[in-house]
Amino acid sequence: MLLVFCQKITPRLDYIFKHIFEVSLDIPVQFTTKIDIFIAHNSIKMSYGKSPLGNEFFIQSTPLLFQQGLQDLKINVKTWKDHPCFFEVDEVSKIPFDVFAASFYLLSRYEEYELQIKDEEGRFLSENSLAVKHQFIDFPLIDFWTKSLFELLQESYPDLKLPSSITPSFLPLIEVVRPYKYRQKSFFKNCVQWIQSLFSLNLWEVIELPLVILRIRKDPWDSFDQFIEIFKSTNFKPHFFFLFTKNSFIDRGISINNTAFKSLIKGVSDYFKVDLLASYNAHRNTKVLRKEQSDFKSLIHREVKSIRFAWGIKGANESYRNLLIHEIENDFSMSYPDVIGYRASTAVPFYFYDLINELSTSLLIHPVVAQMSSLSSLPPKTAFSQLYSLERDLILSKSIHCVCFNNQILEYSSSNQALLQSFISYIESYD
Image (cartoon, rainbow, N blue to C red):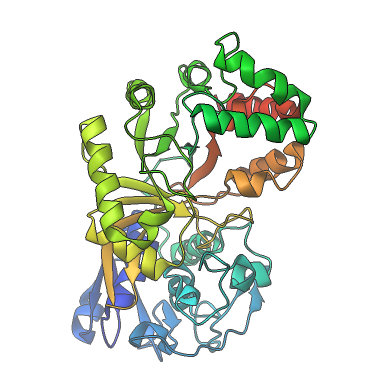
């Protein structure tokens, strides 16, 4: 057990120390404000504050973990061990910056609470992120700081070992907004799509659509048997998220009353874990989210405790506080739609800290390093090469390499051939 001496124990301090030591390193941590208890402790210990008590392992603090509410913070990014750092402190500190305050800033998504220009959907823009501005978006910076802190602590306490033998895990997500390209759609919608294909000179779709409708050819997005075949013998399984909502102008999925669609979800759930892909309206209306959660629960006959937002999160504050109201335990939305990398600068799942109410919550956020919109912005070989590189850079054993694909990635067509082959090769490389 690690004992930490500090002048004051705050919710922020408790949260970030427990994330770094207990969640990331499997090292139990306790706090004390009493000097005599700290001195008497004959095992691993450190102090955190303005100045050291003696010659103990000491990290100098900055004000962030002892504040409440949002402040106008000035972030001055410097370099430590060839990597970015901020919240610089004096040389008396074992590390030349407040690693706990810096980690809290990134993990709590502090910057997403601040006044920023948003996109047309009201979402926090990646270009406003400190990680993008200073080019560490593709590196789990908090995990690097955590490992470096552990190594320094180990120098003072050579008997300190990591109890965990877990290795980083790969978790593919499959997002299903539209399970079919042509099937289970109205005659009118298919006619409109056929005419659009004709006028755009997409001759293959002009031919393909009637062949699928006449059941001469399988729908190109009905790839679920292929997913089962690809993953059935792997030691990892994908997590499917289905859009299951009343159709709107934006969420153009399949009707929740469609029998074939419901049978598809039940069939996939026989092989893999399935959960709810929350709609555009569910993100903005808690009643819609509750209805989608209830309808999906009735379909799969189990509680819906995990969720992914189809349109991404607007910001940590609005999105995650709504999930807590609905007793959601796991979120898989922590990514940017246009950038590959770590939105919260970590590959380790972490609990959401509510900055408005100043408390740690039970919502576990699973960082997603890439999704189809960001992968598709690059040539397939480049995109998957980047995924390989990110996986090799995982630092901590508790890390997850979580990537979100969609069912359309297995479409067998000339335009999708390079992406299809890159995906299959990528999955096979993990087996």
